[in-house]
Amino acid sequence: MHPVIKITLGMLREIYRDAFVFPLVSDIISESTTTVKTLNEQFQNLYFTFDSGVPPIHTNQQTKLFNLVKTAYDERRHEKLTDDMLGARFMMFELMVVWLYFHELGHLLQRHFLLKIIQPGDSIVSVSEIQEAVDFHSKTTDENYFLKSQAREILADLEGVDLTVSYMLKNKLFHMPGIYLLMCAQEIMFHRFFQSYPENFEIPEINHPNPVVRGEYVQGYLTNLVLDTLVKNGLISERKDAAYPITYLSIRASSMAGLFWANRYEEFDGGELPTFMRLASKENHEPKMQYVHTMRYWIDYQLEEIKSNHLCSPNFIEYFEGLRLYKK
Image 1 (cartoon, rainbow, N blue to C red):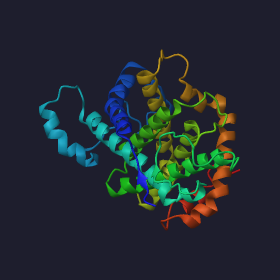
Image 2: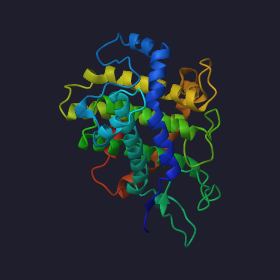
Image 3: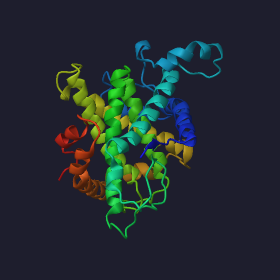
Image 4: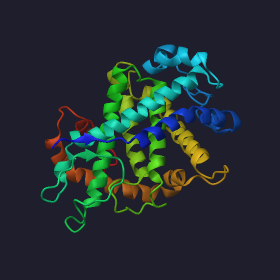
């Protein structure tokens, strides 16, 4: 078996477009609405809040790609972009692609193919985020196939988050702007995947779980991992030292990503919340959490086998189990 990770050119184009436009739309939202002002006031306008569309990015926080192209860009600059906005484009694109790649790598590292029943002579040679017909396994062989598959997607998401944070540390992107833009990138990606899902929390018979539920797991895992990574690297003394700022970044990322998507891709007049944001809101908390807890059951159901199959040691699983995230 020779596994291949496939990320289509079409997906890369969509990621590029979103990273290219998000800073511009965020700036418009921050200047023309009270969304940012209201959120900042809820957090008492403390030091970690920011009024601009994207966070300030210091020179030593910019990506390598930004530093490579900035001079050439300045010579032909036709947009009214600040360096922060330009830097956010490159940083968001990089983190979007990195997280998507590591999600797919997570499937391979966890050897999910060992948990799939295939027909004699068949082989699974690629892992792809694209929704494909299930032709190698069906409910006739396992009535819980889709539940198990959806749980494995969440585990791949979390492995992807873990590897992305390691990448950020190695490449000096583990800072407030990087963390915020990663959160925004993930939220936008889930909005994109949501387009083929019903506007409720009925569990669909497809391989991937409702993106709202995926977002719940990713957000919960990432915020905990960021806090513990800050402590581990001596950047704060205790988790509580950064809990409030990270909560702000998480809430802001969800809001800005949702408004970006609604304004760019949907018919949105500023009235009723877009569907994704409505399903993620408090009014749908109970059915959402029922889905979340169902996924946790099927995660645990497969976790021991995945632990024994995993190609890397140590890996994210011990940390994930210690969090007891959404564990009843």
